[in-house]
Image (cartoon, rainbow, N blue to C red; front, side, top):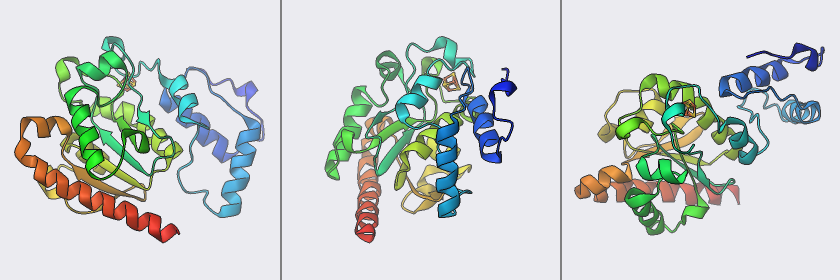
Amino acid sequence: MTIWRDKIDPKITTLMMRMAKSQIDFGVKEIVVDHTKIRKKRRELLLTGQAKKPVALFGSLESHEKAINCCQKCPLGETRTKFVYGVGNPHAGIMFVGEAPGRDEDLKGEPFVGRAGQLLDKILAAINFKRGDVYIANILKCRPPENRDPQPAEMELCLPHLMEQINIIRPKIICALGRISAQALLKTSTPLSKLRLRWHEFNHIPFIVTYHPAALLRFPDYKKDCWEDVKMLRAKYDQLIAEKM
Ligand code: SF4
């Protein structure tokens, strides 16, 4: 990829360089340098003393998706039917993160559809949320063939896409659905059973772990454990909302 240096302001700041580098990492075809936005963002950050916190590089989920939906950073880009970006409320307080699209998701271009998606909707309803209240995404945006587990290298390459979604949405809570997303995001090999029922942190965001709905379909006995997890999640969400009032 070529950086068009002559198109970058010679008084380029560290922030701009960081943004340009991240856009390369995201796999966008052309680096976008919006001077007005950058100056505004930089002023905001400096004024609020938050310059070290993660900064969203795109103004909206739509512009981010548009920039990355042709991504070919890993071989899954060639075998996917549809790119599966994410779905839900762009201002959601809670973000659910699974591992990768399955067959139904790959065909529809939406995460958590089919039987697992219907079960996720029921879980949400049990704690008084609708799908449209939360945001749902996966670590991988393209389906691994035969629904095999994502490989570490694929997740590493795709993770910047999810990180940008998190930076744009800035949820109050992230909930990992299943062992693979929990372990990948927390960078641990601790079993799911030991990660559940306690709060972790991910980029300063409260982070909780529960079962993937597909696992609940295979092992219905885990549903009561999942219920305990989501009750914790709802209680924390209510607490955070109450603290802001
Ligand atoms: S899985 Fe992620 S990194 Fe790989 S091609 Fe798809 S979007 Fe790009």
